[in-house]
Length: 137
Picture 1 (tube, one colour):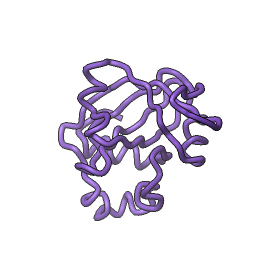
Picture 2 (cartoon, one colour):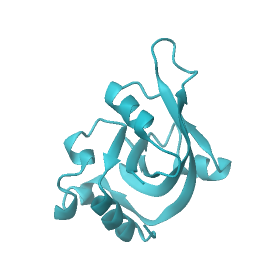
Picture 3 (cartoon, one colour):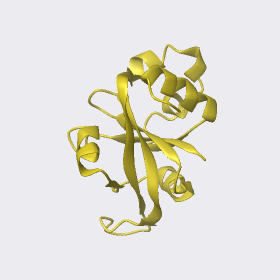
C-alpha cells in the first residue's frame, strides 16, 4: 500500500462535500508530476485530504477506490483523475504551521514541494500524522 497527500481548496471541494457524497472524483489536476502520482495510485492506497489556500491543514483520510482514468474536464493533453472515498475525519486537523515545526516531518514532500497538489507520503510520516490526527493508520 502507498500513501499520498491530495490538496483541494475548501471553497471549491471541501472535505465535508466528499463525506456527504461518500465518493468523489479527484479531477482537474494539471501538473505533470502530480499526474504521474495519480497514475501510480492503486486501489486501496490511502491519502490525506488537505485543505489548501484556506485553512492549510490535513482534515481527514481517504481511500483510492478507482485507479487513474482519463479526466474529461481536460481540454487538451493526457490528464487523469482517480476516485476517492472518505475514511476518517481528523479529530483535530493538523495545520501546515504545526507540520513545519515537527522534526519527524521535516523531509515531507508537503514542505519540500509545497505547490504540488498530489504528492507521496512516506509510511513513517503516515503513521506519525495519523497519530496526531487521532486516526488509526
